[in-house]
Length: 121
Image (cartoon, rainbow, N blue to C red; front, side, top):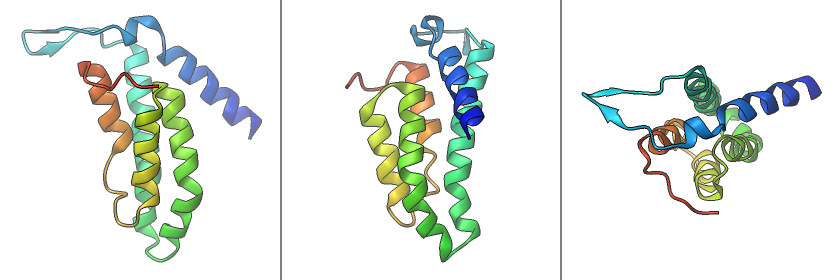
C-alpha cells in the first residue's frame, strides 16, 4: 500500500507543474500543450471515475462501496487539482446513490484545462 501511495505522490507532483497550470490557449481549434503530464492527469481522472462507476457492476453492494470510495476519491481529486470545492463535489457525487455515472474528475480536468475551474481554497 505504501508503494501505491508513493506512486500516486510522484504522479501528482509531475502533473501539478506550472506549465500545465498555466492557461493553455486554443489555436485553430487544436489544443496546444499536450504534454505527457497532460495525459497522465487525464488518465488518473479517468481511473478515478472508472472506479466510481464500478458500483453499477454490483447493484446492491456497490452503493455500500461508495461509502468507502467517496472519501478516497475526494482525496485523490484534491491531490490532483488542489481545489477543495472540486473535491467536495466529487465526494458528494460518489456518496449520493445513483450519481456514479457523472465523471466528476474528468469534468474537473476539462474545466481546469479550459481555465474555467473555480479558484477556491
